[in-house]
Image (cartoon, rainbow, N blue to C red; front, side, top):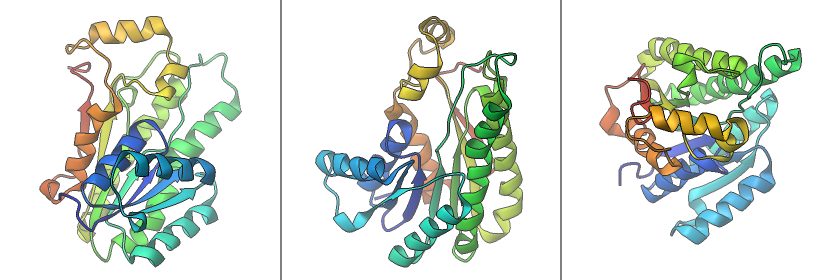
Length: 250
């Protein structure tokens, strides 16, 4: 198996893209920390995974984490180390989006977006690197197509994802000395709850029309990129942002 005996922390893994990443990683032999916004959500995700695939109970560890709470993040990382003694992979997938014009935005909208999408990512990455620097590993950030080309009524979200891309490239340069690879995946139009709640049906149809593959992706369509970047097959790949968008940004 590609990820046999590797230990992965996956934030935002109780649904959507993160859930499918966790499922595929488990199928490929990884031990996985399932992280959601609440422990209840994480426990439910673990139960669903056990129904869908054959996994060892010791292969998963559920967490409810607050991406704004530094101590909460530290405690989670320490518990992963206590159980598995290492962290090989960090998937920074937790995030929120918005569909709001600049003039309708409030200060709190900007702060909340960056607290979760950027500062939370930096906090958990910092805590993981304290351990990962001794063994090497792979950090994969979830970016977005709007983190490359922007998006109408998504200025705060786009700004946070542009920042994620900058963090990805900067940390690739900083952490390469520890044999830590840092990359990102930039999805296009994906059929998730987040997409359904933040993009109008008219906009979705427009984006599908502009996509050469002429369809919306499913979370399963994204997983291969994460699996590659997490595996030893990507041992010389770092600082890269892989666009998995059906050709939308050609």
